[in-house]
Amino acid sequence: MLLIGAGLVGTTAGDLSARTLWQGPPRPAPAPRPSPRPAPNTRPAPAVRPSPSPRPSTPSVRPAPSTRPAPVQNRPPQNRPPQTRPTPNRPPGGNPGNRPNPGNPGNRPPAGNRPPGNVRPPAPAPRPPAGGGRPPAGGRPPGFRPPPPPHGGGHRPPPVAVRPPGWRPGPAYSRPPHVWGGRRFYTYNRYYYHPFRPYVGWGPHWYPMGMFFGSLGFAAAVISWNNMQYQYYSGVFYEPYNGGYRVTAPPIGAIVPNLPSGAITVYVNGYGYEYYGGTFFLPENGGYQVVQAPPGAIVYNLPDGCTTINAGGITLLQYNSAYFQPTRDENGTPAYEVVDMEN
Image (cartoon, rainbow, N blue to C red):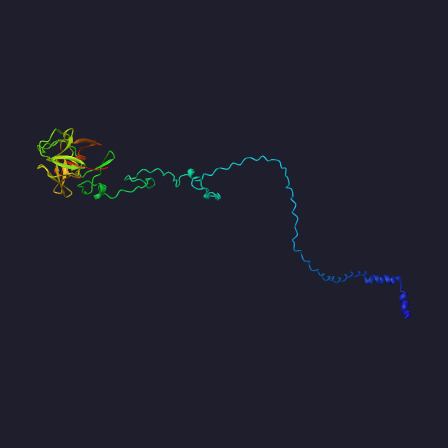
């Protein structure tokens, strides 16, 4: 044991350096380990709260909150440009978008200043008629109704309440009407002019209208019609005038007891009329009633007293509210046709 120790002790410095080189550099010391975490603190037990003391029965009066003065902001005035908004063009009669006023429901203007309700814009200008002269739908006046189909296709018949005595429906007119003075004149035959020559063969007791008599030298029948009294004799009517009597037009609707022997029968659409001195009659209540001239009737003689009318390029003859057109019959004989006039 001593030897070993002596050998160790006697080891030279060169031996130590050589050993040191063989073992290499010394290793670094290991890093110290972290200390263990401390134990979590133990929370103390909650303290026992004392029971609240009973509140007094009388409520405590809270002091009024102090009033803070409003801050005064001394801002300099700003010169802003005025904002001009366009006024909307609203139609009259309503003001949508505004809130209703409880005292004035609907924000209605006063009764005296209210605009008229249901103000419609003006109707567009009517278009020119395209064939037939029928007005367009946009330019038709209020209450416009197309005319009903004509009786037989010629024109509209008169209303029932205003149909004259002796009125009969006629067949269709195949010829277009002649328009003059805002009226339409319908005929079945073609216009053919020939000079008018008054007929004088009505008999010795026939006189033209307007002829005056101081007294009547014959036994005339008294005819009362429309609050008037007429004297009638041999197809002629007389009315009181200037202390005497004057020949007048036969009143439509009056009934006479007889007709003179010169009366002829004229057939129109299957109906027989008696014709004398420019007047037409129909049998009625044992006598003969004065009726309007039936349209389409063909006669060959007209009395003195007819009025010649230039009706827009054609010549018409008027007698006792009836119009006659010069024409020819199927044999080429000059005649006159009663014109159907529509107002």
